[in-house]
Image 1: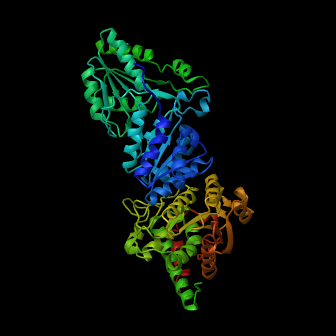
Image 2 (image 1 turned 90 degrees about the vertical axis):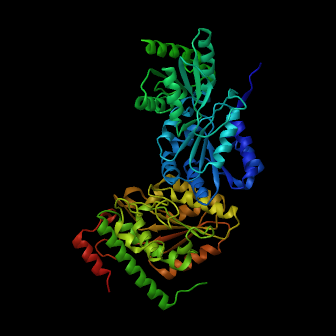
Image 3 (image 1 turned 135 degrees about the vertical axis):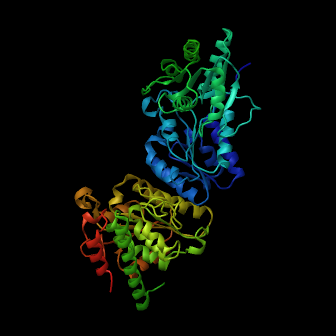
Length: 315
Length: 276
């Protein structure tokens, strides 16, 4: 069966229109990238509630804070690099510290931005956002989950960062699986090791688990769509059962999901683990597929990491 | 148009003297903080909080209240003194400024202090937030207004100019900005650190209605605010020429008093100058 492919940013645009219809307090801001982030869909439907502030992301974050302080629910969208590092102090002081109800939505994150190259490939955004008190960090695994996440964030009161992607991604989460912010999802059960993945790497993790299954290894797959607050209880339960963990993310191995998992395991139940992600490097131009290959963000890489942790576990 | 009677002027003069005493007292008790900018900005706050703004300390979260953002957050002792005097919180809190557990943080915290509408302190961010509040009022067809005070040195921050373009692009005539133009910043005179002139022309070029007044002249400030209210389709900035450290002779026009609390001797001297 052909796998459904959806663009998370396109789903974002459509879902904005949907929640815009439902809640009149939803407003959307963009910084001259509305056609890329797809917030333009909301702009067409609700021009009065859409504010393009031009190429000034710092101002966009502050304006969103002011709207939130007046009871509105602003979604502020731009590319990942401009939505985080570029405006870090604005997010820190005007949004996180104030606890204002601003949703920051980053459309082009990770290596899969592709040809634009390193200047536009944010591999540190999860780390930057995760360290801010009050900030929720959400990374949907596929298109349908993006819809669920946007809807859930519209009802959640508080600052949040939503990480989306440029290319289409396969639908990997079963349609009947419940979604709750802050609750990780067990996609596959398995007693030998566990793949803990987020975002685009969830489908690679599922593929890796299938591959290892052919060799008789039962690998669990956990989707962490909410990196903060992190579902520690579920991780500890699954990790203790399996005794070995591989973390996968389209992000630096420093500060993101890999670090989160290491922090929790290190304090609660140290066991063999490996982080698969970009190894403290900037990206470069190339097709998304070529980049993911070159930087080791593939199912094959996860399989070899899986074998390594298994050998450590059995030592 | 509201005009200040001689009696009203006398009252404001007395009030501001009392508030200046509160400011130097708080700073002395705190042992740190920013007297220079607090004393320069005070008279603008006095006009806003006693003569202009639609606010109710008893119901400080009324959605229809006017909003105020102190973008130059380090001048918060002046705002705290005014808020306490207007009854937003008991005056006893003033002596807890900057101390552990206090509702009066070193820089404004909207989550801790009744009457603070936006947390500020990292310079350059207040105008953007004020724009958001002004857009919100527009979306709700409310006649509430938004006021923001920036420091002149603060306008060296790039975000101010991003926000200035947003205000004029969205024709935010419900927004009135003030520039507390005391011409000094931490490292010295603004013109020596990084020149700001021509200030009025810059704001005009960014699409603003610009007024210039003596920032310690209540009648002039009030008249300027009323003019701002009558202008349609443009945001207004009132460039208020002020004296850093105003009211305490040895602090006036001294960059050194930007971020230094008065010790016992200086405090007593200041208090004597501020007492009739």
